[in-house]
Image (cartoon, rainbow, N blue to C red; front, top):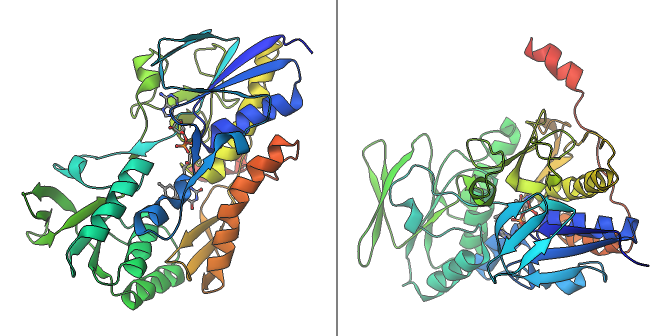
Length: 387
Ligand SMILES: Cc1cc2nc3c(=O)[nH]c(=O)nc-3n(C[C@H](O)[C@H](O)[C@H](O)COP(=O)(O)OP(=O)(O)OC[C@H]3O[C@@H](n4cnc5c(N)ncnc54)[C@H](O)[C@@H]3O)c2cc1C
């Protein structure tokens, strides 16, 4: 069949792969070029395992993308409504663009944090792994951030590298219910992780052979290695391209996922701010269905029709706490935690099944199988609460 339309998908993460596959499965007359800096998919939700040495996180994109997808290995440097310019000098003409460049580690406002390790991207997670392997015994490793990534990271590292000492700076699982927070603290204790809560990092000093994490209570933690996990940022491609962005650089899109300036650019995944959907946190749980909805929106725009608004709710927060413990906290549609949770040994295989399920989900979707999603929160009810 001859193709009527060409769509360029920028970024082959969870959202971009889903968007490309959906378009190709549903519409034989659409051609899709996927632009990504590597020929592999990086399973970011396993990057703490890469750092610890307890898992790998790359898959050939050819195993995940629909056979009709054209993969172009390069980075986009500028996006216009009908053209995407790449690092190798190519300019791809397009009828619609799907913006799916994801997120990166943000150094935040802490001086010196830009030189700390992170588990947000493959290169940094691999560098952390090498540093942990070659560090002297009893090296002090400080992980900054008590959010989900900080918890997964410090527990995975502590379990895999018992010869080092680990300190977590942050309030572990601050947004989770009290029984889950208590369980997490017990698990940190079990793994010998020292905890510094109720204090903030003010700066990280780097010397030739050691580092020092300065806290706002006037104390400092000497460190051989520092890992920052607090605060994700987004690539500045949308801002550099003159597209509408919020204060953090995320592409601003309507509730249909079309860019708010009305151009045929559709935004999906971590790199976008969706109007009226503040509950959508950066997660692969949101990125995958966003990719599917974004593909449907792109198709409607190609036909000159009005796309449908998104309705997307959360299901759970799944946290690994080392390879053999975890928490599965069930969520309301708006991502607030409910009182239902599985904690401990039983949660570990559930989390592992969820992580495997993301890859399997992409492969099945490339063959035309739809993923189940949950309807979003009832907006009228939320507005009533706000009033
Ligand atoms: C250690 C860790 C654990 C996590 N655990 C969980 C979890 O348990 N559950 C959960 O839901 N979420 C988790 N997350 C968050 C999750 O990984 C992200 O929310 C998810 O990856 C977002 O998907 P995405 O497709 O938007 O972006 P990404 O997966 O970041 O993909 C973006 C892609 O775009 C590419 N790209 C970037 N710039 C350009 C450019 N200029 N041109 C072309 N391509 C470009 C990137 O190289 C990448 O391939 C975790 C994250 C980390 C780091």
